[in-house]
Length: 241
Image (cartoon, rainbow, N blue to C red; front, side, top):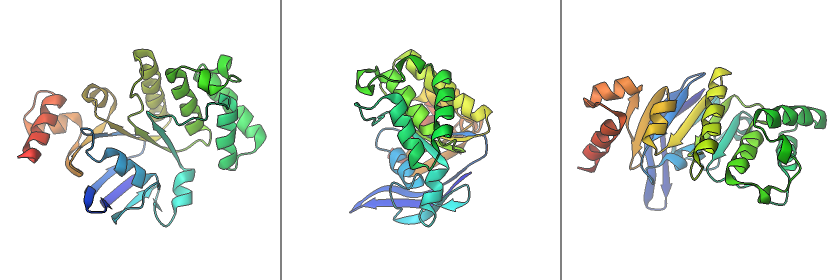
């Protein structure tokens, strides 16, 4: 569903991501775990077509992120900790706008929006200006926005950043629901417990490079660690030497 091969990104003389390779399988939550500044967001932005790779390739559902960028965008949903919602619009107006961008007709937009707002418990704020909503509720609106075109692949960039426990739980429940529906999820985080709880497989990235990839059990076995946190510190520590 997602394939990256030798993915590299330079910003002038700074190499933010170097030779990153991995694959995400259908119906899998694949975690990209690393400290702040490790290259997680840059990697995600290349896969989502926001940034052009300096070198290497990436494919989503077989579509090349450079040659087939439009088709990639049509098949992905993106969610981050920064919702970027226009405050003067209502949740319905925001979701409808994104639906129109994806070429969805009005009737289908209204039907899907009704379903999403019911699922996310947004019905009571459907017609309120978004700027007056809590951060957790705004994140629910961002989830609805990212789902309106029914994508098969989701890219999450630290989507629970700054959220309280209940709002973070909503995001986690949404991710698990996506997996149950057979969608593929790439989940970037620097929170160890979040990766441990949610991800089927994990890649630890540090200083722009993938240090290790595998299930939690495989990573613990390869690092002789008793916890993911211990394994993470062992891997990052070795790379710092």
